[in-house]
Amino acid sequence: MQVAVFSDIHANLPAFEAILRDSDDVGVDERWCLGDVIGYGADPDLCIELARERCEVCLVGNHDLAVLGELDTSTFSAAAAAAVEWTSAHTSKENLSFLSKLSPADTSGDAALYHASPRDPVWEYVLWPEQAADCLAVQEKRVSFVGHSHVALFFTAASDSEDGEEANGWQAGAGTRLEIDEGRWLINPGSVGQPRDGDPRAAWLELDTETWEATYHRVGYDIERAARSIEVAGLPDHLARRLFLGR
Image (cartoon, rainbow, N blue to C red; front, side):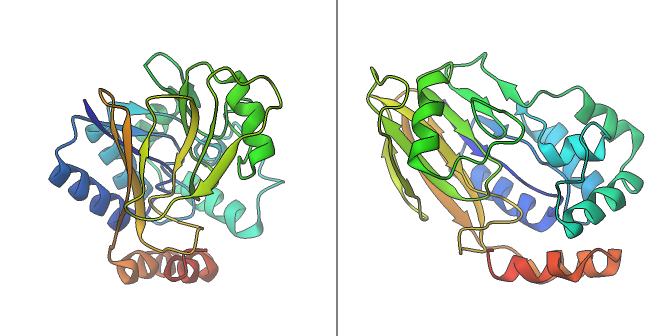
């Protein structure tokens, strides 16, 4: 089975539409979303509706939970907190109800899915090999996928790795291909709607669950349209400007 794995859409409709078109062109069978469908961007309802329609699996992320009133935003940046408040007032009750039924983790399939990390599915940013080694040791499946950091990257260790054993990890550019049929893997597909790895293009990952091959994809989209929507909505200008930088 061919699967599109992606995360952190953040109400960026042009970016979400772009990765859906790209994955359709590839011919994927399923789409797995790792959470944070909303927050930051100006099209929460349309993005939730697309996720409801097109995703066979969808997790809830920390921004989704904050909009639902289930997380305190005191630790959020000022711009992120403002976006949560705006999104809460501009998302339909039906779509909020959909998000409220989602979990930040799903370990029912051949690969484990977490919004943030195997140790903390809501909050932990896995960016360094030392963190990843501990996560790889406790994840429920040999292969796991995480989002949250907005950085396309991967970590791997031997299948028999013990708690604290060293993990190897790297950022992954467009076209990076991984053979993940052996060893333990923790993989981040990057962000659809707000990349922070220096590449402003929307990110998604193609997974073949039969051969256990994974390929990173980046897709250009109409950033001007997404930024203009943020500005028209009255959201912080910073959230529009950063889209052009991939930061």
